[in-house]
Image (cartoon, rainbow, N blue to C red; front, side):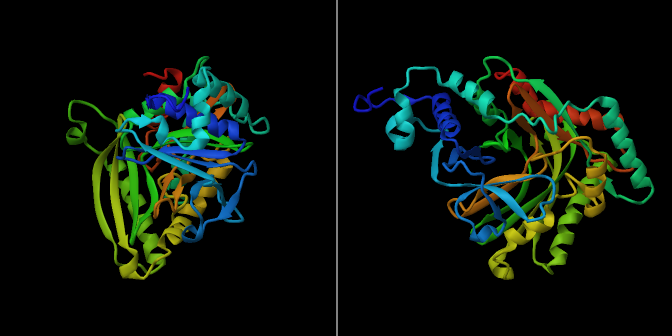
Length: 404
């Protein structure tokens, strides 16, 4: 393409392919995302081949994108994609070649199929973990794990536990990553849809509905999200009926957040909910929390609460320490970044960090899906398995059939 010729608009799929191609060809780390209920697609690239890890003093970090695994880190650090390059565009408006930064425009001259190039690079550059191969959790093994959790709760060792499982699917021939990503954007407007690649560390894509911490100006936000049921009927939000088990499960997560506020003697906060919310074809119960950091004298509340909250009882259990130890002992796989956290930091004076749920890990020619289920003393193991099946399909159905 000759950029001096008449300027033409660029299809969204082509634009996403260009971003993915630049990221995968750079040799560095990058992330692509859209926040919930927005129309802005954002891209960040760290052109260093070194996987950077930094401490989590959020207020002091440069512009970037943070990625942290589920497991506690002894050095209290997370992977950090620094913004060597940053680009965003509005999905609701036409994108023109002149709007693209110079470092992307150079790719416009190519006559080859960018989606095929991206697929080839995705298979080459996504890491297959040969030391800890993931085989996919058998149903009987998961039911046994749920029963172990129920037994621990009945003995008074735990209040709640959130066991997880994996599901392995083949990456189909001709897989179109850009088209799949755009389909996720359209299918899950209320979720944080994301893709990130850190060389020799991991390549992941997801659509998570859960904010861990968010800071905008003087305000801090978090949420308690728990309880799951399929969305049914013409008006699923109004027709939803929650069981006592699900109500108590979500109340435990809210209590966990309030307990964290109490630890730092923060008494001035707003709590709204619980209310029914939709994430894809699933319904959840959610309570929202808001704090004025200026009025309460807590300018570093984002960092403080991030340290206190993760992993929340929604992805780990209660009490936190005992639940974490139970999962480390009894789960048969490494969660890696599943149920960890990720998100943009200090971009345009906002930090938005989400729990890494509804997510998939690309490993060469296969994809590993992850899902967990909140277990209380009233849990039915069979229903918990069904819940994980529904959650795996949130991303899985688009990988198996990208235009599902």
